[in-house]
Length: 536
Ligand code: BG6
Image 1 (spheres, rainbow, N blue to C red):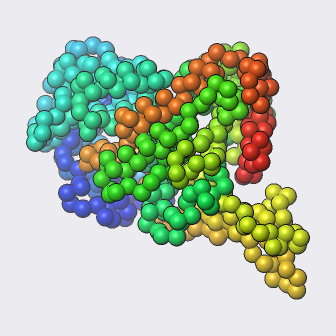
Image 2 (cartoon, rainbow, N blue to C red; image 1 turned 45 degrees about the vertical axis):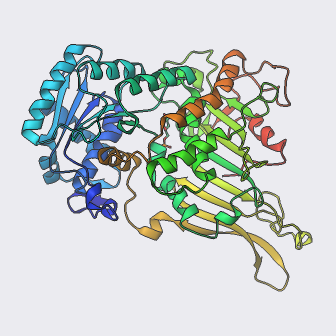
């Protein structure tokens, strides 16, 4: 726990003067909502106490609920105390910060609200010297994104910035960015009608995680990994994002979304891109974003004949998670008792390019699984000759340790770090082989606070650096890839054979127990290729 009055500033390291944010006013749409309380305000406050905000700034909360500036400040103080990660609350810092917080109730579909907002922003500019720089943060239900963007344009609050114009409007859009290919293209077109691409920030909080940012550093700041980072040496890759929580109070949203849209189409695809991309020619935001998109464009599309062999969906039933009884998904609040919405999805992907041809990439993500954990595991090929095979001595997966392959694991969360599994001789008179791991852990290596994703992402949007945001073509490529699967799942009932493929006998929902590692079909999908999911 770090005391916020005397926070050392890890983010300041390497932050050159010209990269400090300019004065700004931020409007948060949906300021009465959960995200604002849990993530946005704690992140903005943390930036403030680390001296990463400019002197001149103002935050204007907006939502339908009536409240005064003072009530908003009190609510946000409570939220900051409750949700700030590793940052102890400091009253004196808060007292300096709070007068920059304002609130106005408004109807985001009504032009009048925007006229009032314009007047308020002009007022804040006088009081706080925000210099006409406005950042509009859309933290509302997605159905409001288009009306808000349209009204921002009609009121003249958001306009395409002309070159060399000093003041900037920017818009940050929360996920989900669209519901399918068509709706995401429509949203994108609406944004581009109003703004130019450098003014648009599509947030994917996975890109802001320190461990995720480190993937590129690990790969391209070292010379020993890249030569083996390809089909010659890598057998397959597994990306797991497991959660123990259920859908909590988000049943209504989840009924529309499901695991594929909620986690895989965005967060996990960013991980795939970072792990599989080519080295960018520079750290220019567009250069890195170009490489990430190229990976998506090289993924083999799902084909009607094999779609059931390349994808598995599941839904949790009753069970015990970490010792506590958990209800089935169909009994959650705002969920249909006959719901066919997936709470688990697993996929097999191939990237058909020179580096990765023939290397399966397995993805899985689910709620109410046995453990909370996100990791990327690169499993290398076995040695060409099993010299120590007959000696046994396994501690791993029933495979003799002499045969168990090297695995490099990037642990995204929790226990952030990197580990490498290798075989070694156990000391003694005989040659017994054991699997061991070499571990790097952020906590022990750096001993400092790891900034939460939103801190970095909000700072980048204020600076105007979109590197860690998704570009328009990334979402387009990702939705294009998943559109056939979405349609296939919409029209085929789980448990009813489509008559094609090997894994046709997917069982009806619910098909996995809460607290387990997901449906058995997921294991079968890997066993077809002679692989097994890692035991975590
Ligand atoms: C969100 C999803 O984007 O990511 C949630 O909507 C999910 O359903 C969350 O729980 C997971 O984020 P993290 O950072 O805890 O892995």
